[in-house]
Length: 170
Image (cartoon, rainbow, N blue to C red; front, side, top):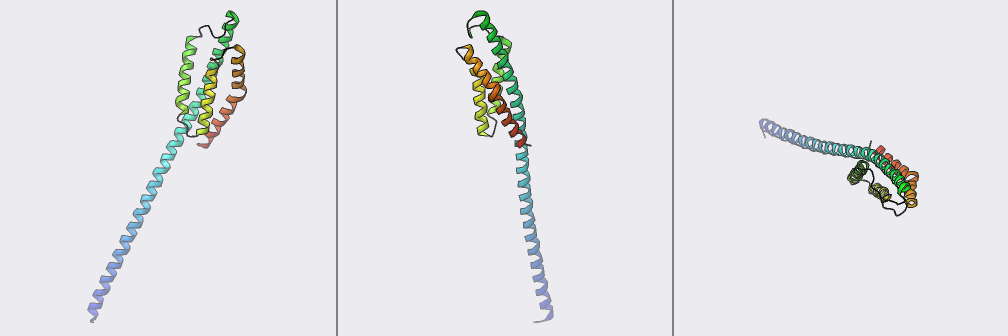
């Protein structure tokens, strides 16, 4: 073969190899770019979820404090009414505090359902139920016992667990 033919074949092979290398490089870059984009979107979603959980835990902490305060206020009012009338939970309570307590219980149930941690969610539901049981008792001593247990044991434990979950989401 003539040198001109070899030159043409060499040029043709070089062009094919160069084009192939360029195509393979483009494919690799596109895959890496796509993977980086997917990872970035996943990271953003996780950040949004963690922020949502943090906000929810903060609202839960505030609402549980508010609710327990209202439960205690209404419990003290019930004790005062009992001392005056001699009848347990037979008199009407302060309607504003009672309405605020109803709203606080509603808010608690909404916030509880947004929690990812199933165990903590169940503990919070149990505490909310126990707080409502203060007003479903048949005697002052039974109500006092529930209030004492709420204040002494349950509330601090739940607040500690909420704080732990809150810190885990920072």
